[in-house]
Image (cartoon, rainbow, N blue to C red):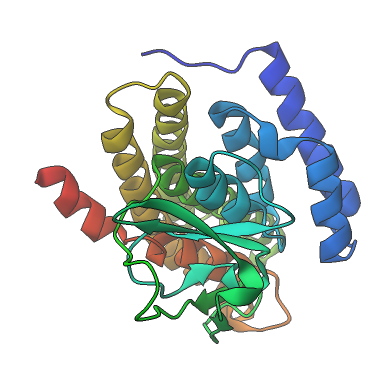
Length: 287
């Protein structure tokens, strides 16, 4: 299967980049309204992946990821406002459940959509304070939850992690060009070049698998489940390389709260942990 962006997809990527760059400072509710007005929720899988990669690049604060890749694939429609889903059968660490207007529950009898206000979701504190994660309590008299993770949910997390890792690499490259030691930029040192190159290779590998997964979903290819698991595993492995090397190359400044780097490091790590880590999906592929 060969894949390359066509002209319309390249134009979409450029438009998304320009739109996000101009509106990053706007409040979350205005961003969310703008994304809905632009019709991004209705984008086909490959085009949606393009949007998600660019939103991952800026650590988008809106509920777009959960709505587009968790709720819509299960409910079969856009939500009333924002949406999310309990699709791993646990009800724990559900993305954006604390601010969702509708929540799709995967049960033994099928998908049930409930009002977000009635779900009783409680936000939980995590290492990434910009990310909304909540526990959805399982009621004894409610529908029994089962696991049914959409392929698009795994692919969405994978391509979002790729976007975050791209941002980390760009920040690191800019830093090693500007930072001087012994009278020369530290980016001229061979060891620094090797670590940056390892980051680039890991990102490109994960990016290729994420778009491959999006393409199999778009074509309803029978390999879509396996492709989504491969993409999620590759993205998790990618963020480990990028996290380790990026933090080391950035130096002590990368540890500070004032630096933007820590936001993208946390977002990439969260994408790996949600709905199964790289190791879990590797084991699933072997089975």
